[in-house]
Amino acid sequence: AQSVSQHNHHVILSEAASLELGCNYSYGGTVNLFWYVQYPGQHLQLLLKYFSGDPLVKGIKGFEAEFIKSKFSFNLRKPSVQWSDTAEYFCASPMNRDDKIIFGKGTRLHILP
Amino acid sequence: DAGVTQSPTHLIKTRGQHVTLRCSPISGHKSVSWYQQVLGQGPQFIFQYYEKEERGRGNFPDRFSARQFPNYSSELNVNALLLGDSALYLCASSLVPARNTEAFFGQGTRLTVV
Image (tube, rainbow over all chains, first blue to last red; front, side):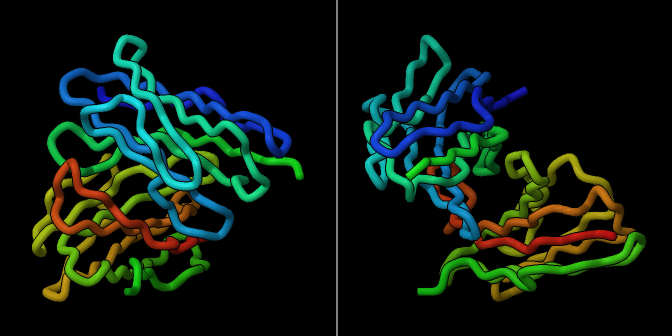
């Protein structure tokens, strides 16, 4: 069955540290992947998306992700995190036939000021 | 422009009761999807509606039902509430139900069943 998994459930970093959150997918065919962010008390927002083309995807707020087909991965990165990046991050993918979205379990990121 | 709006924001119900959650999509969006987010988990797909027709249903019991109105707003109904139905219920809207279309999420309705 199509699935998306996230390795880290809770990450704590200091400001200015570099961030990498892991995401793996397990399906073949056309691969489309998203990263969503949910700030405390706010709605889910799309950070970035990969549909095709350049495997290095730039998103909002300085985030980027790299699609590596050979590793079935789509890790989220940011070179220097800020306190305001404290949030929950979800890797996700639309199902093969339409836009119903499958989400990973999420990674709760806490940035220490 | 207003985003996806959901009402109510919070709700407390007793086991066995019925609940109706409401969603207004972004103006011009014709596709509405519902997701359940249990604490500590990612959102799980419940239903998708497009042009007032159900296009998909997740792995949820028949106690869950939904509908979409001519103005594209939607309701999610849950009957015979169980404690395990306590969750954040999210509504998402998109222009059309296509894989390369971005879905926009509302802030959700926090349902607590006691």
